[in-house]
Image 1 (cartoon, one colour):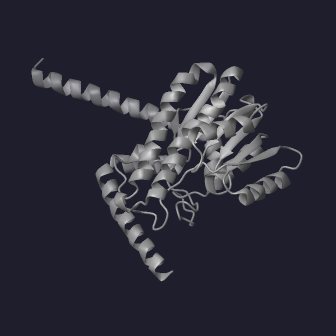
Image 2 (spheres, rainbow, N blue to C red; image 1 turned 90 degrees about the horizontal axis):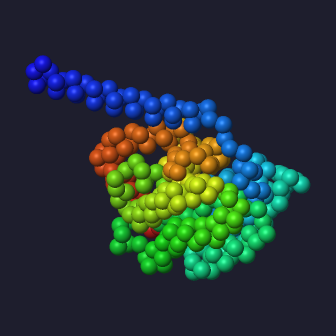
Image 3 (cartoon, helix red, strand yellow; image 1 turned 90 degrees about the vertical axis):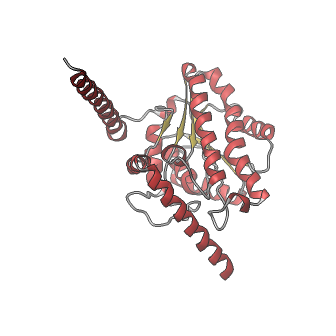
Length: 313
């Protein structure tokens, strides 16, 4: 057999292996997304902690967890919004769940203070699920060059997106270790998985990249202790933070996303729960050069629009 024939056989074999591997990945994704049975979250514990629960994904997740019979500890900075959300929950799930509110500004507390707040708020509670949802992006005009981010915003983004995730986790992990069960979900961003760069959202995307690595690494540390830790990496949802109000097949509402989000708790260390986001992300990743080029131009347009709106106000 000549060398040329051997090279053709080797190339064919490698191509077949790669195709088979990708086919298995696709089949596994189909099963996980549409067929796999969600876990009974009450087996982790009877209480769930949700940070940033008064708007968007956080609020939708609080209602979704309540629908599964979990009592809730809601951690947020606005006492009026917390009370309004807790009242809505109590009215919808009368006598079925308990709701506890904790006023805590994660952008102003030190790490140690966050740990103390969480530890005290959950003392004596059978906390099974924790959702680190609180997050901060750039303020108006919502897309900025790095030098345009003011010091206060920069500190706020770092404290909420990085500091709070670490210290909330530290505040609950000891109790979970004692009970040998628990689930922690960190709401990240698809920017950490599907694109190589995210210009004009540099600081936000970088903090979410930290969250992804933190989640995946700490998940391995505790997987043998009965604790499932996961980072979810959604793309755009119709929330106040994204400024997207129109719901499309690729931009689900917070409620639509939360239903799928809960279904994935306890499984993969990193996942994108909403099916169209996963498809969209696959395309973004496959055409990364074009995606980053488009993102940069879109963010520049968003910045320009935001500045124009500021001038008219």
